[in-house]
Each structure stands twice: as structure tokens, then as C-alpha cells.
Image (cartoon, rainbow, N blue to C red):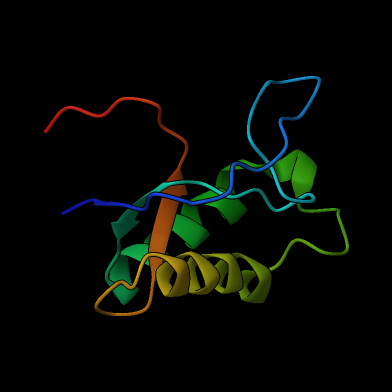
Length: 92
């Protein structure tokens, strides 16, 4: 199930990408709830396959899970975990 969140105020657009954003974290409008096991699997895959990023001091399991938690809170996900996307049009 996807949740579409309509935002009242339109955030400023990033000049480089044209994406709507609020600071560095962004403000997506489509949320896909995730089960805890799915989040754990996604984190395992990210850490296993993005070797060039694993040297970054900030990239760890806790940060990636925190992003899913924030997106789950924004999208009111049943298990409080979600991934988020930007969309102008969406077909169900």
C-alpha cells in the first residue's frame, strides 16, 4: 500500500535537480510502508554492495534505520518504517 501525502506549502525547488526540498533531507510526497525485516534486509544489501560509501564516518546501520523511521513517521506507516519517493503523478 502506498500513501500519498499532499503538502499545503510547496517547498523551494533545488536549482540543480528541480526536486522539491527542505534542507538536505527533502520532503517527498509518496510513502511505502515497510516491515522491519524488509528494512533490515535493505540495510544489509546497502552495506554489502556500496563499498565506496562504507568509509564514510556517518554511514552505518543506525543512520539508515533512522531514515526509514522518519519516513515511517511522516507517512504514518503501520510499523513506523517506510521508504519515500517524489512523485507528480501516480497510477494505482
